[in-house]
Image (cartoon, rainbow, N blue to C red; front, side):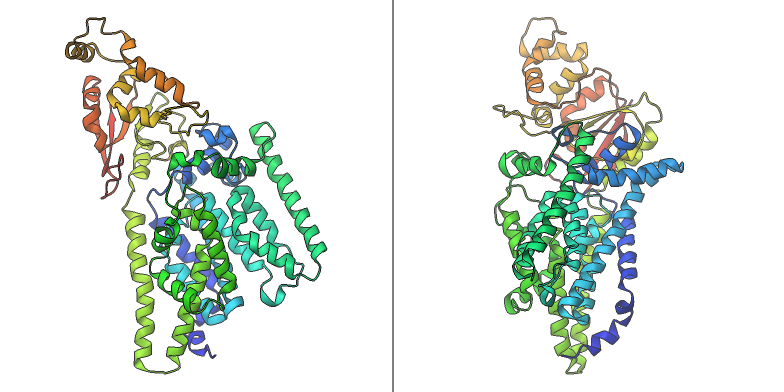
Length: 544
């Protein structure tokens, strides 16, 4: 089969595609200005900020030891370098790690492009590159400091180094170092490579030698990972075991939501692949033998992911480049057959195919990157300027982890948010702090920050109680829940906050408290056009 048509058409890409990948991914640093998931900050830059600058909030995962410090340590090295050269400005602390991630993403793209060329040829590699660069979800995630992104990049490079097809008999095991490091960061990285490692052991000409190399690499990476985490936590910690126990065995991960087993197939892949889903499905249905290596990895991984109750779009990141590799080969295969006819219709079809790939994905990434859920980041930018002194005191009355924290404000001011740790102590009728607050926001505020005489007097009049209005036993029910439910609750304090941050849907519920304590609306910040439960269209900042 001749691929000359596409080789000429995309000769620039064939010469140096890495620079195209770098350009596209660096653009994401400017385009992506919105909130996606809390882990982007709370499990990455917040921990790195604490490591370097001595302050930053450590969530319950870091007190229970189910996260490895390896990934935040990489980001901490960036922070440390900025601090050493006197450039620890909030803007650079926020965006330099994003640039680093975008460049890492470009390296991952480049290796998937090479993998496509090795498996399917140059024309397929060209269209794989186009699929990678036109994927809205990859562009949306490229600058985000997520462990899932680091996992995806490591596995992409490892897949390129893996001995495919004619090299199956090789004893080369260098790829396993990257897989091991990815597993140290996020143990789920082992899932796509389990069948590949078994296959390599089966086909190699020297099984015992390869097995010995596997053992050496696993032990070396394990010792490094355990040693680093033990140093960080101050006790012997095996993070992969604790991670697996929490997510797969204890059932506590369900605290953050459980989705049906078919969710990845019916919603996860369609949403993340969008227009690339059609060529991927056609390739899987009509050319399964041609794509059996990558297709089997995707199928195996989705099956394993589907067995876990807690599911998220980002958990598909490790296999999305493989899906796009398959989709790119299908497009190249079909368009090559059209190009042989050398008709005007075949050219129109190629242009239409390219437009179908780029236009919906471009619109999606622009809206989701510039508009939808931009409120949290804009809020922290406002607070950077509105909290000039250490006397500032910020209270976030939002679903937990709704904004970045110290890593964005870079000031050691007092801040508090509503916590939402799972039921680690297995208590009956457990409620986390955010749920307790949502049951009765006004009473929670009175319990935590006191009450004015006029408000309590009104409550006494309405309830018909004849008792001292300053008797805090009126709120004993909430106090008991708060004290018993939250192992890692932030310590209660009575200093009135200088700033209160909330979604506008909450305003009507706590308006009396705001009026009693003379808070004024200082900022109204757009968040999203679509309301999502406790998260509404605007974020409000009240201040004194």
